[in-house]
Length: 270
Image (cartoon, rainbow, N blue to C red; front, side, top):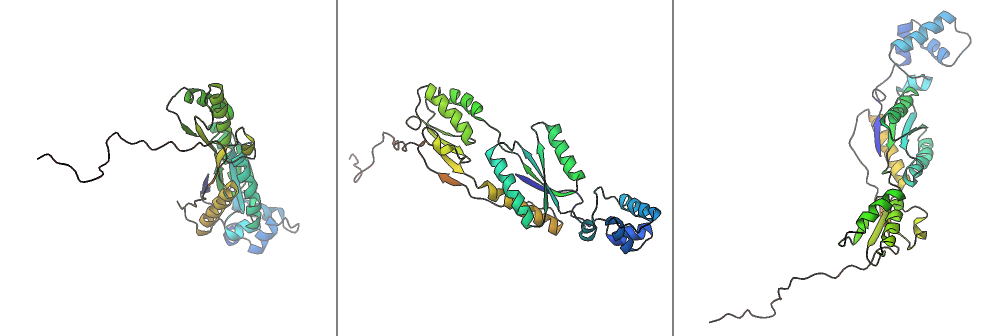
């Protein structure tokens, strides 16, 4: 997951006083225009709207935006929200945004660069002050099955750590078809801890990532950047949790070299 403030979003935008000075009106008149007050002459209204446009703000500015210098909209660009991880993060971001008095807009970017770029541009046009990018490892059971067919033919392959649980499911199927048992011959660990992983045969040992907390942590970092007005490379580590089940076999015995260990004083020939 990646976050970033939109260029210029954290800088102070055109304040009401700036717009008023450029349009030659009072700041009260600017507020009336923004609030749609009927008692504003058409010519005056046009001068205010022209001043806003000339000051370079691309958004549909509200009084709050002019007063604070930034939008309260956060955009989320998510790829493949049908996957467990992305959908969990988007779901957690909603309540976290509401708690922070933010509005959340989600753009669904496809795998193609052009589609992703269109989603980003649309969110910027809608006034997003910052963006959260969710780009998962999109590996499905079919890809795991294909990889598993190859791995099953490698005699020395005794353990596999899959990119996600669905990939592990495909590997498990391929191993079974080649007569390699899990965990008897091959230990297998997944990642995600999807709700179905405990019902695989055998139940899958996996790593649980608290995706909800990942989403909330990303939002906290973004808010810090927007508040300070400075870009940051800070990160928050959300510790994953190992969920042991039945796909990891016993550890292989330690191999020793044929060299015997000395048990007493070394004998020296005279």
